[in-house]
Image 1 (cartoon, rainbow, N blue to C red):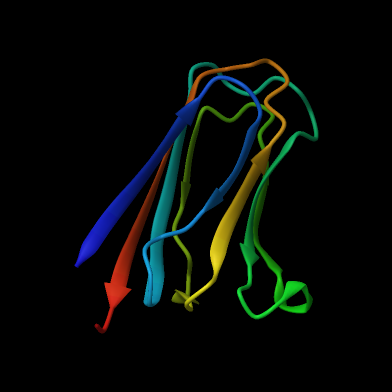
Image 2: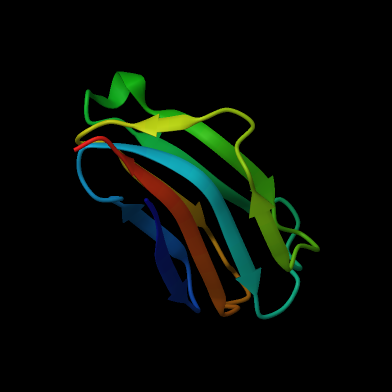
Length: 110
């Protein structure tokens, strides 16, 4: 069953997002900004913060937000999250633009 987790704000985006419990799969991420990003080299990153320890943390996606107003990330391969894993979303948002992020994910198994 697909589910959606939504995050919104108007300042720095620095969120650790737990998508339920058990085995999960990331389906897609959508992000809309009030205005196109205007600050060069302001990266939006999605990092897997592994429940197994920091030595397994992995940057899954990174995007320079300069000129971007709508972002759609569709992983080319399944990305599984195991119990204890969270997604760390980070973006400086120096212009304090309002943003909306939707993470579409599926719970797998029981």
